Image (cartoon, rainbow, N blue to C red):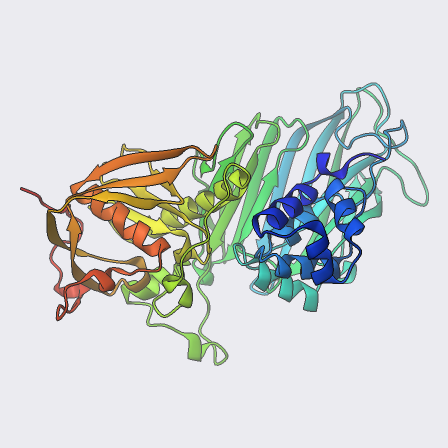
Length: 492
């Protein structure tokens, strides 16, 4: 039997959270009512554990869904020695064309995948691995978990269909979880077998349907097999006024915007977005996200916010608004480098949110965003300097090491209550301590406007809003009365 920790993230994630929470294996076992040796088997990858146990373990270790997600990502089965009858999914297969078409009709999403395959190996290919994964609330694992526990994906609702050429393909289930399915499409059916022999090409298609209340506003393509061309088409009803953006990441690069933007066109009553890339890197991930206008109905009338206000626009872009307790909480620090991948994910989510916000407003002073403002309780923030050519400043576990005695007052705004501006005193310079992904602690000095931006975000991660920094008796002013929009702060 192999070590599961080599194949999936769960064993290492469990040991990490048990260690940082200060539990011995025996102490954790007592809290869960299980044998201590079972915890050791889970961490060694010799046991899988039930979904109920993993959820209880996640809650006990205050992992905020990290254990549950790691458990879902893991294969969840003992690792047998590879045999000719059970080859890796990518053996010999080259994807010449990979095309995804996702259509939303207002109530359901339908995905149609088309792949042109070539067998570049030396053995016949008899099956192809397919994954179906949904996450209604990205960045809110507990909320998503609760949804899918109550209403899991079912095979009946998916209505999966698959073909190879003119032949229907059979399929067998590899994994069947609440929000994640994995199947083998077989090059066979009840009447025939049609393996893909060395040197041959074949086009396979498959489709399935998911209700809109189970599909989150994102679609990701992961390059697991060598691929020549990858393309994505998204179609939405015109009246939902869709906006689409995307990011990419790979084994050698962090999250970054797509190198080319999705193209947009209108076709009758649909708005269609298309994007493609040639020769993507193996293991690269391309993530497209969207925002839709919610139609006004009697059911959502109580939740409707005046769409003309700046704060409503920010709320529509996914920014947590004033009154949410998360804005007054101290963010959880990252354990780096152990949580480097989680830190990359959070920073990627921040960059995506910043792209959405910048479509709504001009930030002549630069801008920043903290993880709590997109509903993530982690100590991460990103600051964009006013110079559009400057690289984003990424702050992980930041603390204020030193500030100048000299201060000045300037008006600040906050994405979480963007209808007003406030006059805030800040030091003219500050030295910030923060942590790199590899765990190295660094000190960086910022001055004037950049210091103000950075200090604003560090405050967010400590549960402090700029209103808390204003002088007693000073009131905020409506954004309409502020005359500095789109211009940088001035200094002597």
